[in-house]
Image (tube, rainbow, N blue to C red):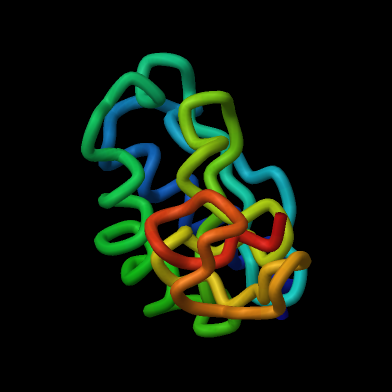
Length: 118
């Protein structure tokens, strides 16, 4: 029986073949439901990649590996789109602001009207 990591890597390899680039998405780790992927430099310039990772690619992976809850893309192009603490997209961040303790409508921290965990 394949391990969780082997199952994830097999799906990523299949997605890479479909994309037509062997290293379009590189496995960087999996912890607490969060799959860390590093897009290739060629893919990181795609303006739709962040959306595609959280929708199409995540759904494809979850079909075979339901333990994956979300994808955290790694690289400079994605640094601002995800919370540093919970690694969720900013619009889904549930971290409380370290200054006021609010989860929503925080004026202390930056991030689309939601607390960003600092």
